[in-house]
Amino acid sequence: AQKVTQAQTEISVVEKEDVTLDCVYETRDTTYYLFWYKQPPSGELVFLIRRNSFDEQNEISGRYSWNFQKSTSSFNFTITASQVVDSAVYFCALTHTSGTYKYIFGTGTRLKVLA
Amino acid sequence: SAVISQKPSRDICQRGTSLTIQCQVDSQVTMMFWYRQQPGQSLTLIATANQGSEATYESGFVIDKFPISRPNLTFSTLTVSNMSPEDSSIYLCSVEVTGMNTEAFFGQGTRLTVV
Image 1 (cartoon, each protein chain N blue to C red):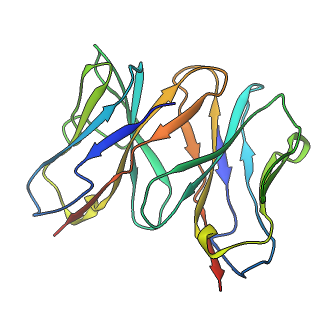
Image 2 (image 1 turned 180 degrees about the vertical axis):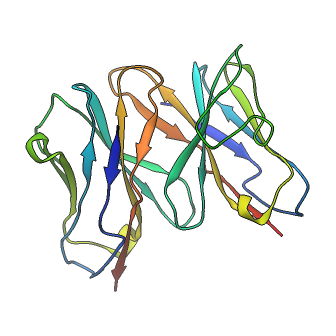
């Protein structure tokens, strides 16, 4: 079975603090993709990153960084020097490469960045 | 990439009525997906819609309640039938664009309130 767990329901930080959002996944597939999406209050889903299972390199994009560790089945997301505009719900998702590319979403982490 | 337009963006409907949500993509795509996001919850896949064939529904969703049309490679509709307050959710259309940077693109969602 495939599953994505985001144990942190809600996180509040003060602006400029660093924050890490956790994502743990389960899958029997050897080839799969992991994603992070941002959902601001307006409701649309904004793609942040895609990682395939063969690429464990960590990635940094501006203030965002991602740590993918297959050994612990985790794909954590860190925002450095958080800003109020980072306030949103963040979803981690998993899809496999066979069949219909069905996405399995975690329950999301609501991040509140306080000024 | 793909740009997805969903209509309507929001609606308030009376119980017992039906609402049809439209999803238009700016390029031809093989598979389109419909998701439901209940208040404060994650995204749940309703069905996968391929052009020229019947939609494939996930467990817990049935065609009589959520009929889907897919008349061509750029358009799909989802109807929420005989609505009840429990159907109040955000409904999102999504497409998968295969390629080197495969990711799912999402429409802005339809925020439905049933009263």
